[in-house]
Amino acid sequence: MAARKIFDRAGRGTQNEAMPAPSEIELTLLLKAWSAGDPTALERLVPHVQRELHRLASLYMVGERVDHPLQTTALINEVYIRLIE
Image (cartoon, rainbow, N blue to C red; front, top):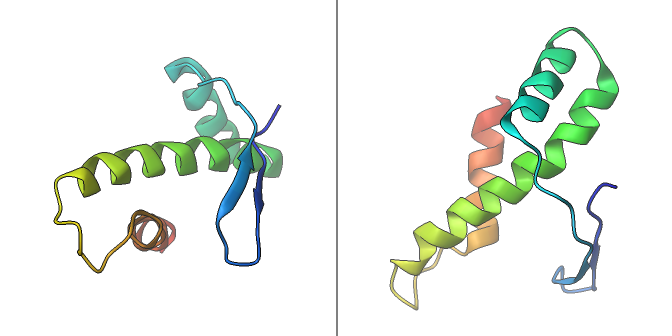
């Protein structure tokens, strides 16, 4: 089951269903399927990449000052844009 996040009008996540973490083998198979042209592989891969980016961004932002202008979501968006370019 893929994770679903429901957003309120301010863009804040209000609900997040649990999604089991895939194994490295599962991720590798999804990447290979996507490379081979399977469009559903990308749909299944993106939530895992997004969750990992959020985890890493949260860890990074813990070390920043409280009034830092860049928030976790903005950091994730920047990284994601660079990944897809």
